[in-house]
Length: 206
Image (tube, rainbow, N blue to C red):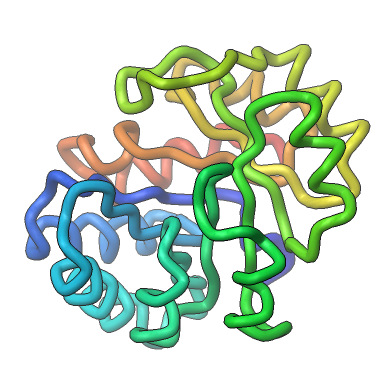
């Protein structure tokens, strides 16, 4: 796969395991290229159970499984990588635990973090948030399309855009040349996640 970040699904922690697995299978059938399991409220055991269920659903698809925040969960299920926030485990420590062959992403919320990321052993950055979004209320800033274009010029890493992206604005986001677009609600809450993923994929500017 030339660009694993292109259509990046972030799961909804409020969905049951059964719904989660069905959404992931449908989304991948529709063209999703990477899946991140996010679990903000649950205990560690339920996180591992959910991650393992998604890993099983992804078997044979070549779609990478990324775990949000938790290096221990990623190691427990042998996921393909971890995505860290600014208040999670330090990147250097995470890289030591994961080894070189796992993907490591880092959320970037301002210009200073973007600059600091250049010297870190990561594989990609998640630029947050592009637009206002109901799923994330503690956002430091909204980058907008101009901010996204600015960050793309300054980062030597692939950039995944996240936050408030939906079918009404996705073409504009894609036109910036961003490497990937991360979505939660637009796919997880769609009546038909496969069709939603397919329609979104068709809107991306290659």
